[in-house]
Image (cartoon, rainbow, N blue to C red):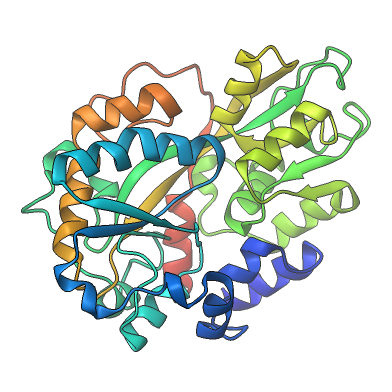
Length: 343
């Protein structure tokens, strides 16, 4: 998997901010995080009796959703103060926390693959399902060392003004530069892009795993010069609305909000991909009990429904409610399975 990740980094023309974070250990780990966050953001073990909880926050509308749906209500419920730290997708932060006994945040974003053995048991606290009601959660997303805060969809967004009113029907149109001229927007994580490329090349969702890396890169090479790599939801929304990337792989809620604001955009659900925002607590964190109480609070049916009204990712409890006509779908959890099998 390391060689394939390196191949993707070369393919996407060098590092982006988020990719540098993801590669933290390779570029210096603790030094990189210390430079980014500064010493004032590192939480020492002296916080064992703290009345504060530090959480990673997102950007834009997602940050607003987290604050309104989860942070502020839990502050009131628990009588504590919530502090926030920058969103950080680099899993090496858990190794750094366990090694140095300094914690950048009490509840942090984690990849599902990292949360599996051996890393999960080495660097993460077990999720306390005596506090969190596991029966309310979708089983695959209630894992031993991580739990999903929500899940969300990547769809094919399009700007109808730039496409001349033509509407794409699936990922194969994403690669058709004659029918739909213009740049193509993609995120900076290999899992979503490689799976999308395989779907566009005719691979059935049930056959995605194990990933055929050579086939995926061959497909991506056909439009390589026209790819624009985005890093945040706000950025990709701007790329689509401005028409800089008339066809864009992006978060479904970002397309929906732009459409609601009257922008000439739409999205195609055929072949959409599902991913999850997983959360974990670093092993040995003295604030782990309060962190588990926070997770129990935000994963309750009521709070998930409140968040769903604001943000519209699919909630993490049963039932999930009405869904659009979605056509073919593939879960990014399959990529995590492939990664574990390749180790």
